[in-house]
Amino acid sequence: MDTYSFLSKWLEKIINTKIQTWTESEKIIPLSQSGFRRNKSTQDHILRIYQLIVDGFNRNELT
Image (cartoon, rainbow, N blue to C red; front, side, top):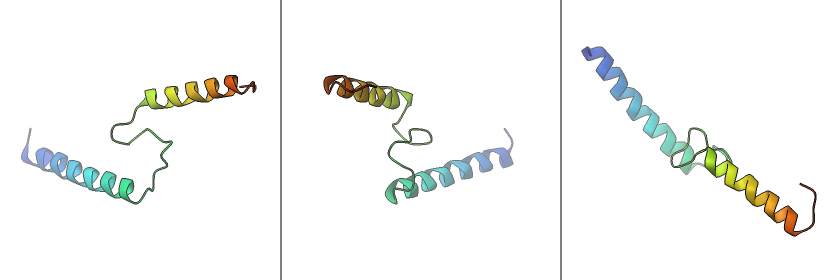
């Protein structure tokens, strides 16, 4: 790996961390979005949809 490649990757990581921290602290990205957020995954949405279905079923609502 050449020096420029290493420096650009290092700078990219620093900038990405700063942007993620800022967007989280300012609540710019909605809580319902899992992509591009730390400690979030597709499973979060699957569990959320599952819970909505169960709640609707318990209230005798169509889901």
